[in-house]
Image (cartoon, rainbow, N blue to C red; front, side):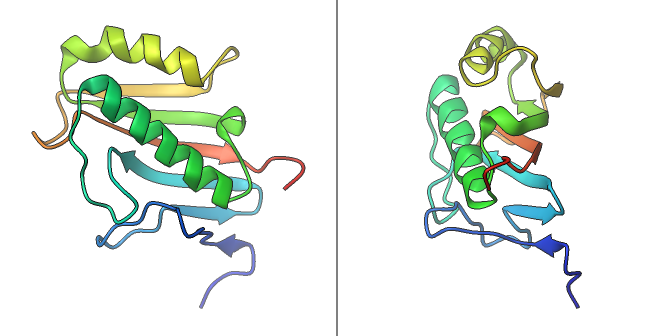
Length: 131
């Protein structure tokens, strides 16, 4: 049985996976977004350069947030997984293109992804006021 304050929003373009998890779970005004990687709308991994995978992952995050009534400006925390430590400098540069001061709370872990992924991001956000 589902609680009335909990929902699992998805739009037709929300990236999904065959694995057992929801793209996001909304509890009241909080949105918990599962890890978003460089995948297409069916969940198939799309390999690319670090920058390409980063941008695709954050755009997937944006789609999930939009389905839940929010956007990147309402993200309060991110958890970032960077496969190769040498990509952290590039990660920090790209991150500033999508998030600005005051930045969300953030954790970044390196050397933690399989060879098929260079980057993954998960987030907690609040709903936008007009949602």
